[in-house]
Amino acid sequence: MIGTIIGALIGGIFIGALARLALPGKQKIGFLWTMLLGAAGSLIGSWICYAAGYHGNGGFRWIPFIVGIAVAAGLILAYMAIKGQGTRTDVKK
Image 1 (tube, rainbow, N blue to C red):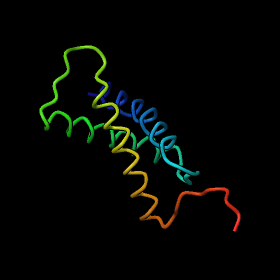
Image 2: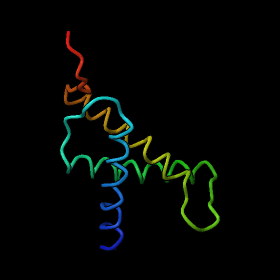
Image 3: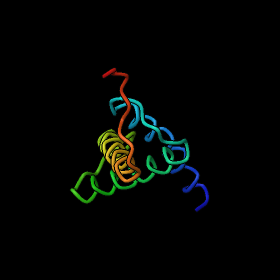
Image 4: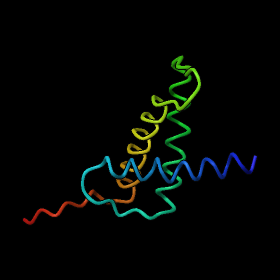
């Protein structure tokens, strides 16, 4: 049980970081939120894939991984919208 939670949080670091890299601009979001939203995106993305009938045949499952990144990116965008932050770009007006 504890190992599963630790694994989800470690996976959340990578999923959240990749989701932030996929988004344009700079996001003002801390490490803890990146990890938590990445873990949530990974879990929700995996659930979506398996609910849609995806069942991998062993090895690393790329489809749930990519869907998890997309869901985490959406969660990060939603978090920033709720907090009233947009993505920062270095465009001068």
